Amino acid sequence: MSSRCTCCGRRWEWRPQNPHQRYCRRAFCQNERRRRWRKARLKADLDYRSNQYDSQKRWLEKHPGYWRDYRDGHPEYVERNRVLQKARDRLKADLTAVTRTGAVLAKSDACPDKSDEISVGYELLPAKAADLAKSAASKRVFRLIPIGYSDFLANSASCKEITRGTLAGTFGSAGPCRPRSP
Image 1 (tube, rainbow, N blue to C red):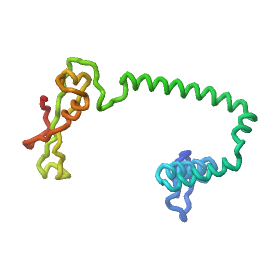
Image 2 (cartoon, helix red, strand yellow; image 1 turned 60 degrees about the vertical axis):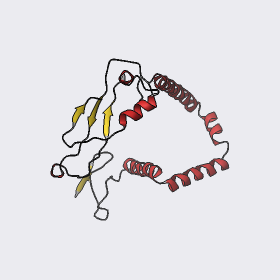
Image 3 (cartoon, rainbow, N blue to C red; image 1 turned 90 degrees about the horizontal axis):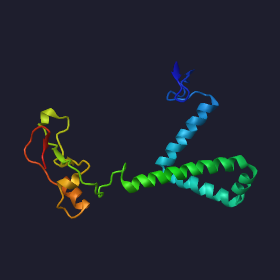
């Protein structure tokens, strides 16, 4: 039987001894398989990650001048790293500027400028058991808070109180989801 390689997409004959095989036998594909396994393992297994870190640390202790010698012998590596580091620094500076102004990132305690927009709340109401696959529905009120919600709650002392106040509460009667004015 044939199958397609997960890495290169080529067709290959899989062996009956390994019915779950997803990669062909080409060296590139096998290296990719190992790389993906290692990446997943580092992400999921704390002990594996700790062992890898300790192993690298011990190796560097045995070879203290390795990176200095490598940079001395590979000036193109040093130049490439310098250029890439400048690009990373620019990106970090841009993200820091955006974060300071609040243009892209959302924070629960950030107060936006005043505007004429008004918040609209939506109630998530439980439906009849026959209408749902799950009978235990949440009884919370969630409100969508647009930019400018400070006009809507102008008398509150702080943004944290505004956010906390808009998400609190429960609802009463059952029925379909409907917009509710605040």
